Structure formats: C-alpha cells, structure tokens
Amino acid sequence: MKLTTEYKNLLNRALGHSGQRPTKQREHVFSVLLDKRDHPTADEIYARSRMEMPTISLATVYNCLETLVESGLIRSVNFDREPTRYCPNLTQHAHFYCKESGEIVDIELSDRLITELKAVLPTGFVTEHIEIAYDGKCGDCDDHA
Image 1 (cartoon, rainbow, N blue to C red):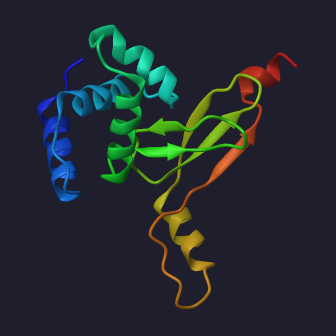
Image 2: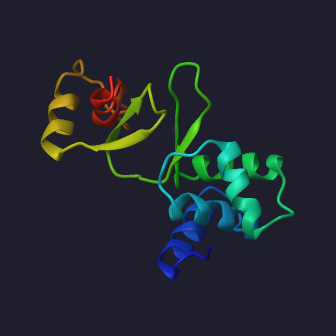
C-alpha cells in the first residue's frame, strides 16, 4: 500500500506541525487506515500492516497510531467496553456502532445540523469538536432479528 502524493504531503505537513517526522512505519500505518476505512482496532491494523511490512511490531503500530491521532490525521473512536478503533475520516461526522455485528458506520452531519448543535451551548462556550456516537442495531441485523 502506497500513499498518494496528496496523502503523503498531508502526512508530512501534519507531522511537521506537531513536531514529528515522517517514518516509513507511520506512512505505512496511515496507508493501511486509508486503504480500508472500516474503523479497525490496533490489532487489526497490526495484522494488516504485517502483510506488507512483516517486521513491524505491535508496539510500533500503537506508537504510530498515537502519533497520527496527536497530529490530527486520524481520530480514535471509543464505545463502551470495546477496544479503541481508528477513523481517518476527518470531516464532521457521527458514528453508529452496531452491537450485533460490531460494524461502525460513518454518519454524515450537515453544516446546518452542526450549527444547530453549536447554538445550544451556553453563552461564551466555544466548541472545537463535536463527537456524536449512536449504538444499536444496523438495518442488516435488524432484518435478521
């Protein structure tokens, strides 16, 4: 998996702004996340990473993920009692977690909705990020109930 020039430049800029430098491991982990945007866990990213980089360690994957989160390139996604998952979608969106299948789906949030959510904040409060998470059963699992 190779990063496109656009994503490689994004990675280099983001890491530079956070005082980090690009490494082949960071680039590889980032490319794994971009390749299949299914909100994988660190263990899943490790397994995928080893397919093309067999010498990468689990500790290195965790360190790369931490750096990518700190630099703002990916988001960590947490649900009750579940392992942390990682999302490269940096647009304003919510997540839906299906308790039956374990699948996490991105839910688009309109600019109008974001404006309405910010409007309910008390006077003087300023938001930097809104995080909305749903859980329940997806349509596929609900059909089989």
